[in-house]
Each structure stands twice: as structure tokens, then as C-alpha cells.
Length: 249
Image 1 (cartoon, rainbow, N blue to C red):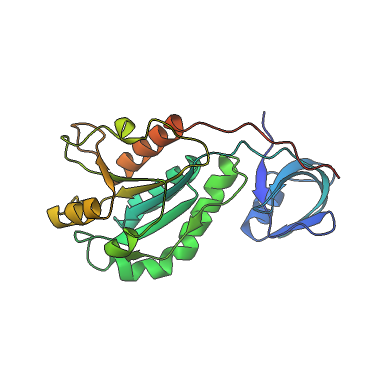
Image 2 (tube, one colour):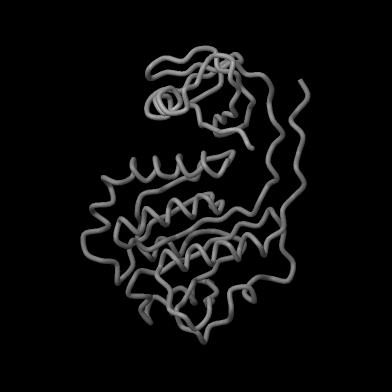
């Protein structure tokens, strides 16, 4: 069974400390004790670490060794139109598990009124959801969750492959929208529409900006379902580079 992994603020002089809810979970639920070994990440490197002390809301670790770097994967930015927050939070959780590097909320023409303004108070909660999903899925790095931007600003996102998911089944299948030659170093940006779909004007503006419209087939999917399906295809379509050994000390 794989060891549990936790994110710590920093590793300094061979030691790290975890506080807050994660520490309380370790102490109260997992019954952590000195001498037990876990994996920790400072959002740069992953380490094998031994528990030195465990108090009510603080757990201290001593670094045992640095673990091999994970195999580099394609860099994915998910530009997702805001949907009802309960569903958007589920989307954040699953997109994190599927390896996105950045989640960029956007306000589209058919985004429900008030969601963009209300989203400012949700950022901390969204980051917490992403952190928990990163620990569960044993990621080495946390995804970045940005503040909401306009659709036009989203179109300026730079990437090697820029895809716009469209519920129009006449669009090419997403798998056919990738270039014939691709690598794990590619940067992919995925535009995901709101519950009411894209407007014709948005489709035209995206096309003019160089985005490739693509489809997941004739079935009309919920936005969060479409995100999961498309991200899985992207991960499968792009190769993974070999695992790198940690630097010698």
C-alpha cells in the first residue's frame, strides 16, 4: 500500500512541520506517532520523512531521503466557465486528480449572474479542495487556482495546443484535434463552456484567436463531466517522459 502524502509549507535544514487541519487529521484520525514514516512535498520536491513529534495541531518531520521526481507530464491549463459552485468544486477535485497544472475560472456570456463576483470569497476553499485532492492522488505539486477572468482574456492564454470543447457534435473528435507529433513537454489549454453552452459569437471569437473546436461526441454532457472526459483523453494522448533520479548529494 502506498504511503500517505502531505504538503508542508517548506522544508528547511532537513525538517518540516505540518499545522492546521492536516496535522489534526494526522493526530486524531490516523493516530500518528513519532517514528512513523510518511511522504511529504514542499510543492517542489517529494521526501520520505519520519515523524519526530505529534501534538494536537502540529506534526514535525525529519527528512529521511529525497524521493525520485515523478515522470513529467503534459502541462494542462483548464479554463472553465463558472458553473454552480457545488459542481465547480467537484470539477476542481477531479481536475486536480487528473493532473491539471492550472485551473482558470472564466466568465462566459451564459455564466449565471453573480457567480463571478461571489467566486472571490471561494478561492481559499477551492485551494483547500485542490490540496486535499492532490494529497489523495499523490501529486508532487499543487495546481494553481486563479481568480476569474473574462472570456476575451481567456482567449489570450498561451499554449502549444489550444482546444475549445463544443457541444456541437459536428466538431472534430477531441483526439483528432491533436497534432501528429506531440511530447510530454507540450502545454495544452482546454476551454470549457458554461451550463448553457457557448454562444455563436464566442465560438467565432475563439476560432479567430486560433483555438481548435472539438467534441466529445453526440451526447450532451454536464460541464463537469465533459471536463473529466476531456482531461482523461488529453492525458492519454500525450506521452510521459522517463522518471528522473533525485540529484546526488
